[in-house]
Amino acid sequence: MSESAQAVLPMERPPILERPRPPRGDAVLYLDGVSVVFDGFRALNNLSLIVEGGELRAVIGPNGAGKTTMMDVITGKTRPTEGVVQFRDIDLTRLDEAAIANLGIGRKFQKPTVFDALTVFENLELALKAPRNPWACLRWILDGEARRRIAATLDEIGLAARAADRAAILSHGQRQWLEIGMLLMQDPEVLLVDEPVAGMTDQETEHTAGLLRRIADGRRSVVVVEHDLEFVRALGCKVTVLCEGAMLSEGSIDHVQNDPRVVEVYLGR
Amino acid sequence: MSATTLAAAPPVGRARVTLRLVLAGAILLLALLPALNRLPADAALHVSDFTIAVTGKWITYAILALSIDLAWGYAGILSLGHGAFFALGGYAIGMHLMRLIGPRGVYGHPVLPDFMVFLGWPELPWYWWGFGHFPFALLMALFVPGLLALVVGWLAFRSRITGVYLSILTQAMTYALMLAFFRNDMGFGGNNGFTDFKELLGMPLNTANARAVLFYASLAALLGCLWLCARITASKLGRVLVAIRDAESRTRFLGYDVTQHKLFVFVLSAMMAGLAGALYVPQVGIINPGEFSPGNSIEAVVWVAVGGRGTLAGALLGAFSVNALKTWLTTVAPEYWLFVLGGIFVAVTLFLPRGLVGLLDRKGTGR
Image (tube, rainbow over all chains, first blue to last red; front, side):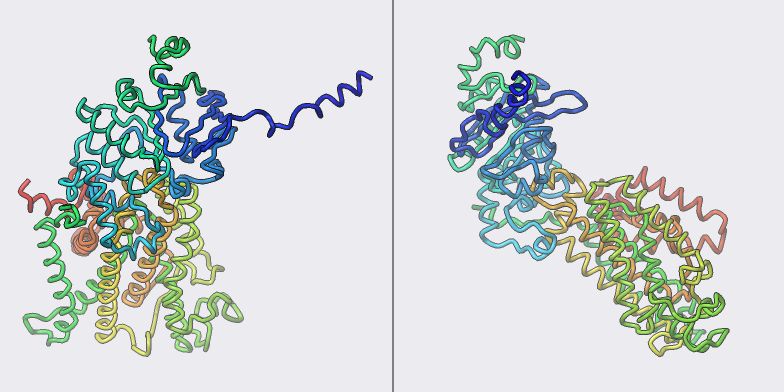
C-alpha cells in the first residue's frame, strides 16, 4: 500500500504552470520568478514585477540589489537563468537587444552614452523610429515630418539651441537629456531609465523629474531606477524596493519609507 | 520652431575644404600624367615610363587604403587581412591573363598554363573554368573577396568578436591563404604565382598604350570608389557606422542590427580591395603568394593611420605619401625601410592620432 502511495504522490503535485502567478491585469512588462545566477551568485532571486501601460514606476534599492541586472534581463543583455520575462505576450528571453528595442522597449544607461562624434541633431536622427537595415539607412532622406519630430524633441529636452553642436561638448546634464530625447525618438512603449539624475545639479534634477513625468503621459510606461530618494519623491509614483535580487516592498514612497523591512536594509543605513 | 531650419551636419572646417580642393587638383594632375608621358623625351614636362608605372600602382594602393578606411575609420573594423582581398582580386585577373597567354607559353600548350604542364596536369581544373572571359574574371575579382569577407565577417560579427581579436582573426586568415597559395597542388602556380603576361583585352601589355589605359582605368576606379564611399559616409548609414565604431552596444539598444551593418561595410570594403588588386596585377605584371603576407596588410593599415582614418582624403593622402617615401627610400637606403615604416607608425599613433589630416585641421583652426 505505502509503496503505491509513494508512486502516486508526484502525480498529485500541481503542474508547474498552474502554480499561482501574479495577476497580469493590464501589464506591459511582466516578470515572474526571474533569477539570474552568475557563478553561484544570485544577482536576481525569484523576482516578480508588473508594470502597467502608461505607468511611471520608480525602482530603488541598495547597491547590488539587482536593479541594473533587472534592466539587462528586460533589454536582452543578460539571459535569465530561469523565469518569465514578457512584453505584452512576447517572450523577451529569446530575442536580442536590437529586436527588443524594435519591439518598443527603450533603455537609458546609467552612464550617458550618446554618440560623441555626431551632433545633437544627428544623435536624435539615428534614434528616430525608421527602417534600420543598411540599405534603408543608405537611402534615408530627412523629410519634413522627421525634421518636425526631431525639432519637437529638441524643444522637449531643451537642447534646440545646441542642435548643431557635437554631443562631445555637452555638459553632463545635457547629455542625460539628449539620451532621454533619443529614447523619445524611438517612440517606445516602455522606457527603462537607469539613474537619470546621478551627478546632476538640483536644478537639472528638477528639470529631469518634470521631463520624466511628462513622458509617462498615459501612452508610455517609464521605469526609473534611482538612488536619490528626493528625486523619487518628486516623481510622485509607485515605488518598488529591491533587495538582494528580490522585491522587498512596493507602494507609495511614504508606504515604503515606513515599511520596517525597508528601513532595516536600506533607509536605516 | 527654429530647430526645423537647422543644418543636419556640422560645418566643415576651412582646412578640410582646402584639403578637398588640393585633392581635386592632385587628381586632375594625375589625369595629365599619361599625356605628359607622350611628350618627346627631351621636353621639359616629359614624364618617364617609370613614373607612370609607379603612380599607376599607387592609385591601386589608394583604392585599397580607401577600402580599409571605410571599414576601420568609419565602422571601427580593424582588418589586418585586407591584403588577402587585394591578392584574391589580383589572382582572379591573373588567372584570366594566364589563360590569354595561350600557346605562347614556354611549353606551347594551347590551353594549359606552363605550371600545369610542368606538374603534368591533363586538363584545366574546374575552378579555372570561365576565366578565359574577361567579364567573368572581373566579376570573380569582386565576388571571391566579397564571399570570403561575408563568411569570415558573419562568423566573427555574429559572435561579437571585435577589436584586437578581430584583427588577429583577419591576420590569421591572410596567413592561412598565403600558406595555401604557396602549395603547388592548389593550382595557382605555387610560390612562383603568375607572371609573363602577354595581353589584356587584345592590348599587348608593357607598352606605353597599355600603361596609359590601365592608369586611367585605375584612376576611374579610384574616383568611383571615392564617390561610393563619400555617398555612404554622408548618408545616415555613415552615421550608423560611426555610432557602431564609438559605442557598438549602445547602437544595438537603439534597435540597429549591428551585425548586418558591419557585414555590409566589410563585404563592400573587401570587394573594393579586390578591385584594387585586379587593377594592380596587370600593371606590375606578376602576382604570387607573397601578396598575402601579413606584413602587406599591416603596411596598408599604416597608410591609413598616417593619412588620417575616418576621413576619405586621409586614406588617399596616406597611401600616396607613405608609398612615395617608400619608393624613394628603397632606392636610397633599402635596408632601413622597415625600421622607418615601424617608426612612422609608432610616431603617428603617439603624436598624430588623427594622422596628417588631423595635423592640417589643427593648423587650419590655429590651435
